Length: 393
Ligand SMILES: CC(C)(COP(=O)(O)OP(=O)(O)OC[C@H]1O[C@@H](n2cnc3c(N)ncnc32)[C@H](O)[C@@H]1OP(=O)(O)O)[C@@H](O)C(=O)NCCC(=O)NCCS
Image (cartoon, rainbow, N blue to C red; front, top):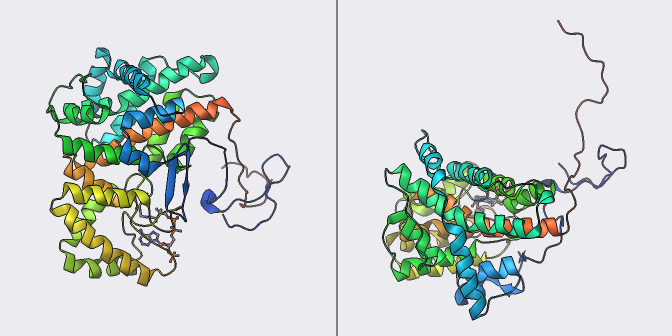
């Protein structure tokens, strides 16, 4: 859709303005959850710099900030921790369904996860938020945010022929996730590294999946429907589906000396370099800078290789795509960090979904608090109607 500036028909004869393709820069809602300032390379959760929060606070504290509107004090932290723990366990009667889901061929963990979230919503009797109290909706949100990583870990284990594990109430959300995957208590550095990644991806302005969640919530649908839809939006490689492709790309490049030729060939043939470019950040993506630090701290050959390749890619893109300001985005180091934490590639995007679920749920809660059905218009530019309907053969 071209940005013609003309008045568009909106289906009811009242006219309207054409929005730019991809709704770039169009403000479609007011929010108090957070925002992204692309030119400054800055994003925030509520009133706090998201990177500073990440360095100073736990995942649970940031979750509290989003769900409750403020950072917790000591007592609130303890009671919020219990609340999360109380919502985390999966009902036993869900396991046979997860087992069936894990046994399908082909198997894609993110597709299975969104199906599992749908099962949870069905099993728990989620209903239109128009028919329940705000407290019940909050409880639905807490359940989905707490159970998403648990569902994912259960699917992961069942797929590999292991039984799902019960969450450990003594472990933090991040440590629990690693424990539920491997069955081993994770070491401090892995928990630290993964937690940095998870916090960095909890929310990020009006990205495609968040918008999807809010569109679905705006219809009065139940919270499960909004999260399932958001997971569908996240699955695409232009949104959340990139981190595994980044590691595949690093594999293809092979050695640092081959990076320049590989990038030139890919750009010349019209391909995209995975983990580079962003709709909003036209300078540095602060998440990428943070995760580069984390990757470097965790160390290992992949991290070292990725940092050297990043510099080459930035230089080649600056030359071959001048003026587009193409830098590494969050996905470039996401895969590197998750790989270092022992998370397999096909679990990268689902793991992203497990932290973003907190953000999506917060947006659903906000959307319903001042809801107006989101229902835009499209400019019809097909053959002029009404044409006579041909008689059938
Ligand atoms: C994220 C992304 C979809 C944002 O795209 P966008 O805002 O719609 O930007 P556009 O697609 O309009 O791209 C603008 C220009 O930069 C180029 N470009 C953008 N990202 C590029 C990339 N990763 N590799 C090579 N060129 C890229 C486009 O080819 C286009 O060039 P042109 O003007 O010569 O046609 C895009 O950068 C991309 O596809 N990145 C790779 C996938 C990825 O990392 N996704 C995770 C996002 S967090």
